[in-house]
Image 1 (cartoon, helix red, strand yellow):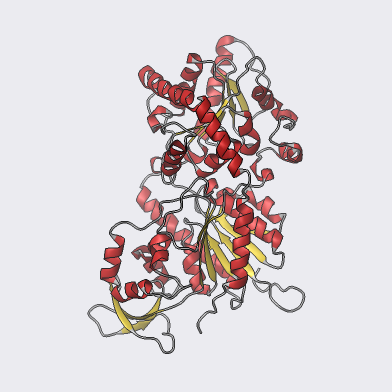
Image 2: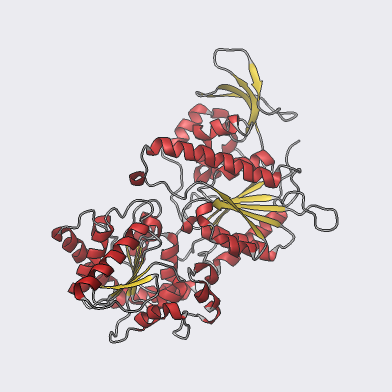
Length: 545
């Protein structure tokens, strides 16, 4: 990729999008990369992520975006891995090595030029250090909201350890990195774990924004990291793991911009955020990316938010279920995305029994997306087989990735279709409060029932309740209990049904509709692309020599 020309002898500028985490963390960044590649065809664009997201490869290749996989998994579930701490460290070391190799393949053969940049999400901080190494701009883009301000003790410890560096950031001139940027999102860059990698593998100073000479504790010997810039004012700081440094503050080609894929209609941006942080609107994926079935994807051009769309013949049963048949009410969606693979659904059978108990107590129908979590898929197939054997009645003819359970009132789907098509056909959505599911349900204008498990999911769940489109969040035992005894199942089902009834109240549905109307005017990817292009064109910072 590096060194390709544009036919006139001038090398093409390079854009690298680096995103790690689950599908909800990664795919929106890929959508932004795709939009940029379509708009700026003079760029050589690459996308680096986990090999587990290989389904992106064909979509990106179609628009000349190079897909570069690394072998690390999106998540390591502690319950599924022995010696998790040892395994995690080994995976992290190999992950950093592969990141360096990939970015070096792109930027290593030729000096950076005006226009080169790296975009990272918050789970890809390796990219920030690599941008410093190869002297290219670094931009942060996140499709989710994280209360990412530093811990309460961070400022006090930083000021104590790096007093002159702290003073520099406090007094930083306009349009340069300042203390607000540090406390907003950059504080993890100063943790000691990054220092080891920067020193040992990247030949950078262990402390970001500095260059200088290491003075080994108890010794007068000095070992050079990077030559100090001409005219630098030398200051001394200390870091226990490395001894003391003679350093100067070093401007790097970091772009003071954070782009967030959420709507200001939903999220109130904190006052302490720097002015360079932009809330662009939710980042929705291209529809074609959201099908697990190639035939359905081919028909996606005919699919819209009305009932005029159609799925392929193998999945017509899902469309028939959505239409209702003898039931007048729309079904309720249930999906937990990657929560199962993270190890939180410890007893898939208990999860299904909660839905069964809810079905037996009401006339609700449910659609369950298993999201490729194999233990849940196996439990679904086991229940379907046992019912067929005990009744002697042949199961309804469905596609191989679909099953009907519990008297035909729970439709289990092992694949995926766009939420933008599915959710308007549902009465409500029960989910884990992930950013993608939250945004899709908000845009569809349907009530939500949330059961958060980790990270920003708790924020989204509370925010949806505050907005009036969801009841109070469920606790995990109210949806995915560990035990499948009668009391645990019925107690969970009672709480779930109470939440669903609350979500389906007229005032909740009316509020969901009002918010959807406001969101319909936004174009999150388009706005993020506009800001990215403006910044790339106008905010290049020439590297120091």
